Length: 122
Length: 192
Image 1 (cartoon, helix red, strand yellow):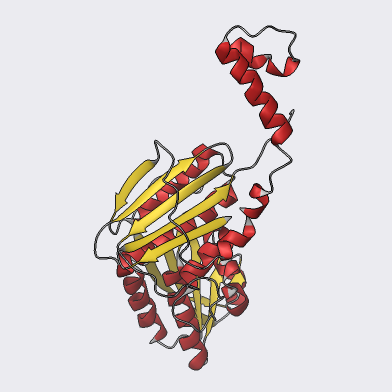
Image 2 (cartoon, helix red, strand yellow):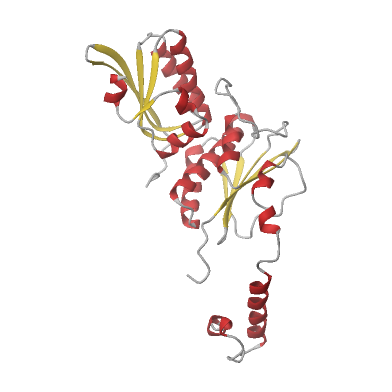
């Protein structure tokens, strides 16, 4: 069951990690991301981008839903990182999120992995 | 009445019990012989979804349609749509599509409309329909018909809606916008 109850909540947590000596930033997004909380999401992601990470990994496994405005926030991160020589990777999108990534072909622009470990290994 | 109805396809061997029974027989016969004839169902798929905004007034929603008002509580809108989609018998992946489509349309209410939006949902054995109405105006008649580039910072919403729904009807003028989304339900093979 994709939808058990209605929770209008977006949580974002950020941790700095290392993989084989290579540091990366892990951002976990959980809940539902839509136009009503995109500004907040964009601000949080901008903060991370401004730290100039070499690799930014966004774990989407806890995200039940994402609309096109949240997708634009991710595309914006990808563009900014690209400009400053960093890399963005997405991990484990659920069905609804995978669908919008596929429809818009954003999944061809941003690499999508099935685990944080494989994303960190590049 | 039920036994009469159940034996309708057995032919006239069973004597109709009432005038109502006779009309049931006729209706069954009509439906059976008339089925392959009209081209209408064909014409009602694909092409309509690419029709420009406008056209004549939409027929009224089905009697007993569910009605829901929303302002910014899009998660609640999605929950309602998902519940009805499953109740109507839409498969999981199509239910997810419908939730995405309605959420994108309702997001436009949050962005542009000045008053609450209204969601109506109804379904029968063939389809589920979601209608979203608000006081916003869509000025571009081709909104959502062209694939936006990934560089564009907007415009994906209505495009996604057109991609996932079986039919999209848009009516918009200075008084407001009505968008009707239809998803076809899986049909059981006749005789099974």
